[in-house]
Image (cartoon, rainbow, N blue to C red; front, side, top):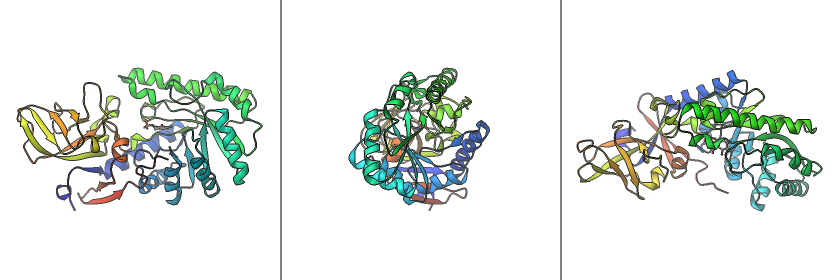
Length: 359
Ligand SMILES: Cc1ncc(COP(=O)(O)O)c(C=O)c1O
């Protein structure tokens, strides 16, 4: 099957770009002397996780226990759930998982550590815990100066071991230029290291110092002492990443859509709306980038309608166009699968194995 034969809207992943993105990040991690543990939330697919492992990743990162179960069933043996799991369902499933793979879990409160300890005792297992540090993103995590107090509060609990610290520098996505992004990435890494240092001084054996976001890794932010990177988006890249060092030649996933209506001069409708492109938008730049018509803007998305403003003769009815989505992770999660496009133009359909597994 070829791209012109598949129905639209569809997601198409260029295999050569995918391979090159995987290879490039693996070689940057080697140069930086850090372990690479890609976040699978972007592709949610076992085959691509295995490609990352074959390129040298030490394991994978997941956000949910059900994603981790899919990866473990697919044969990945080293998994970090970099999310502050708390619910009974999650802790019970993680306890089972802990017996069949090398599992690390994140936490950011004494109450959560207490629960991991209780579940460990009940399920006769011991958990490796990684403390989440807030390095500027103001999402989850304790501030670096709070890390030692939290470690002291939980260190006598049985069936848990504090082995590391982690951060996610999600706030880098808000930076508008490369210079400010690199400066923020460095500050975040330094805050993480400060937390690791204070824990070590307090007598805790911290072996994992894990940071991770695609912008920071693309910026090759080298701060000695970080042991692990967890980028996710780099595998496909998207319009958001094009703000920094990525150009469209490194974007592996595109949404293939058809122009279905041209109801007014300069207004075109494509069959990829919010149920395909998601609601993600970039200030002033819209809901996607159209490589064949860079001046066009996907200005709005309704469920099945993508509304494009462009010059009057930009597109013709029935034309198939590619759109680079703003935030590829949410786009993938909306889809059952994507087509992998090989060098000879042939396509292979891959399921989004961990689609929608939010618990
Ligand atoms: C905890 C955590 N680690 C790593 C990542 C990967 O970051 P990026 O999508 O910038 O590659 C994310 C992204 O949301 C995350 O939440």
